[in-house]
Image (cartoon, rainbow, N blue to C red; front, side):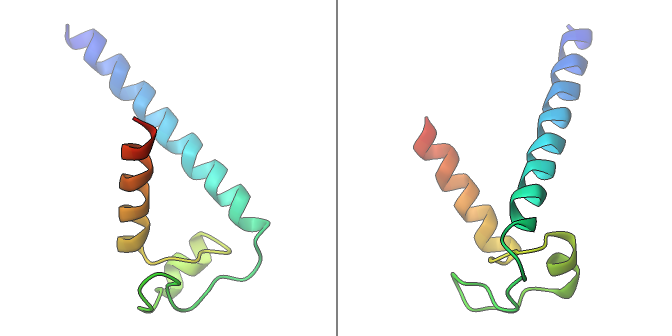
Length: 74
């Protein structure tokens, strides 16, 4: 059972890394990052702007958007 769980965790981590990579590639096409979140207006930290070129939301709004997307897809 533990082997199956380990395998599932590895697969989930790989999928997460692929999603991150895909998001970064998409955002590179979007140009300059925003300094303020387009959803809430809060400042987007410089580190996030550099890590994800073309970022448009703060981490909290992005988290909420991803949760809504997952719920919508179910």
